[in-house]
Image 1 (spheres, rainbow, N blue to C red):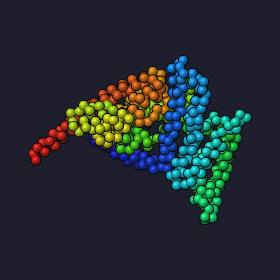
Image 2 (image 1 turned 60 degrees about the vertical axis):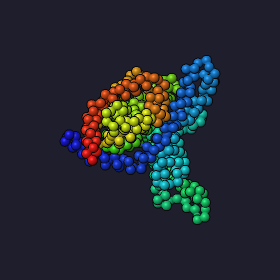
Image 3 (image 1 turned 135 degrees about the vertical axis):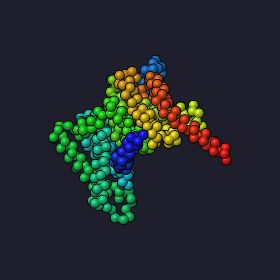
Image 4 (image 1 turned 30 degrees about the vertical axis):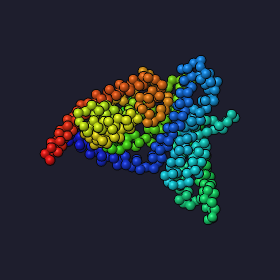
Length: 428
């Protein structure tokens, strides 16, 4: 136990200051908030695929004939939601970063969109080339939004803007203030596009994708995902929202992957990626971080009154993937007894779960299932396969087995405390 305490002290000293800086870092927060805001876009695109897929289930029906006749029109919803993820990323990150600086958000969003199109698209005889406007352009969208907003902020702080006289309506004044930042940004990003193409023969998004490739590779193999799960659980054990803190790192990759999976499914191609946000939340963090559904079930059958009541209170939120009541009510935070099942357990479970999806035993996700949906339903919706639900049941059983010996140690101590309290009340 002494060694464990030293380990905890070491992590507190080295890890927590880094996490605190990340939580306060304005660019990372803008990215995280933007990725979360993009989830409804992926849900719309995903359920467009569901609508088309159902036609294959109900063949020779009015519905199937309708979808067959208007499939191109229906898929327009997919093409202009998940098919424009890069464009939306530039818009949302521009908005969130501008808002954090208390700047003119509408103007900065316009700036970000224009600069993104300058870097990411080309005009052809048939119109605008949209190759890099989808998920392949998400990292470019982040880059463009941050740089364009920072340029605008610097110009504003240096008063290098057009200021209108007093009495001019505020909207008119702000639009004139936007002119010089828009011109400067246009010159900067157009120069970047020309310079990169002259030097490499490639567009900027191709270069950024190659730079970000190590991150994508890291989260598209089992050991990278195991590390991510370990860090999420470790932060939660310290009382820090692990998935929210690390969201700026993994969410761009996760959303890019689900978009590419959906596009591959729509085209009848093999689904390329195991790691997606819905894979993470529905299996590796099922019922909430730490897969605490096993601990909750043990509490429901506990001899301890406190644990049994806590299990009842935590049951409904856990079904919808919310486990803060059990995390802080047990408490799990800073609890040395639960460190192994809560932090190490999900990390080790990640290996077989990932391999099951990688091997094709269970189909990979191509749908972004809605958040705060009962986890068994979420698991089914991500790939329209009951194999996912069966796997979740197996994870639930495994979670009970992992937590069981550690919970029994806690329960024994809690029962002793309850007896002592009862005896103390009797003496009075």
